[in-house]
Image (cartoon, rainbow, N blue to C red; front, side, top):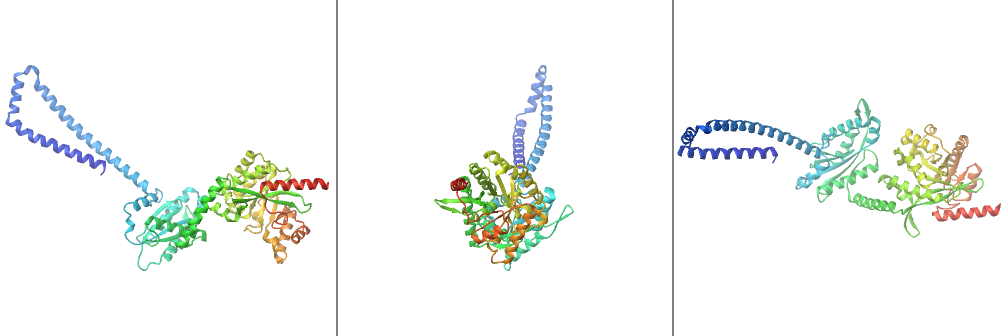
Length: 517
């Protein structure tokens, strides 16, 4: 019950009580001649001026009644305003102020309130917008807000009788009653198509996509909350499949999601406990045979002599938002190890493309160098073409900052990405690395050999050093030497080594060089 109703009820009760007392006292006063006796008493005691006092009391009482009535009205007005404010606060607590849609809290409380969804059969669509961040960066937050309002409007009209919730950011939930002949996948595709139509954002035409996952209640969940989780699992599968995908939930998805969650938790613990460490693969000068550096490669140690390769966990770290923490930890360890190497032996370190969305990337790398004491000239950062084409201007600024500090830049896996020479010409590189796929197939595929020669010719023409990856036999080494490749790495020289073995390799080569001289 609202405060105003309580006060009004209390005021009414008080008024009824006072009226009842007055009705009881009035006949008693008449019966005992109260008024006549009062008049006689005042006439007999004129010197006390009781009539003036009585008149004053009556006037004061009347004014008090007027004041009380006005104060009650003011109090009622204040309470009414407070109730309105409480209602507004309650609405804001349960709705998204931008779109006006109920929010995650509203859904949770509705589920908790004897679960009104329990009655009936429902289909739950979990929707995540694809490409919204890029549009938001392009048109600004105000433009992004306009787009989200349009998304909410489209979802409200997507399916008849459906309830729409904004779960946060660019995630939405649509709950629809099921009909006998309803095609759930087709309805999901209809939702995706609605959201893919162009948006007019402040005079600019923008496009986004949508990943849609759906689950059925009660078939896919013991309660509505569980069914909602199943719809989320299906949505993540749809998102992984690509823009505008629609997937229905099945138990295989749940098993995969559980394994993924367990692996993610294990990965977090491994990063925290420094179980993921750098191993070092030698970089050899193909002209002289000298050791010129090491490439740091991540290894997740799971037991004595046992480890997981980066291909099995780097992608998970990127998707789980752990790649920055992992990369910083590995770089810090690698820089400390490299401090024990001769200054002529460089450390090559890979940076994930997903890290280039961070404008502070160059500052973090430089800060780690300052923390560990490794000279910038001894560090070589390796990046892929994918990292460059995501945001050319930002990538260009990050690389310029790194080169300005003295850090060398190498373009890794050249020829395997989606860039073109026009884009790459905007950057300055110290080295180009030829991907292992070209090196390993050069002798069986003439096109692969031509690609290797073309990359080397490009590097030589631009005055950029070249490194070949994946050298595993003498014939590959002889071919690369014959066409003028500068550096190489691969199992022919050495596998990736733990830090202590890398030090031993440096010491052993130093002894051989001393004996040779």
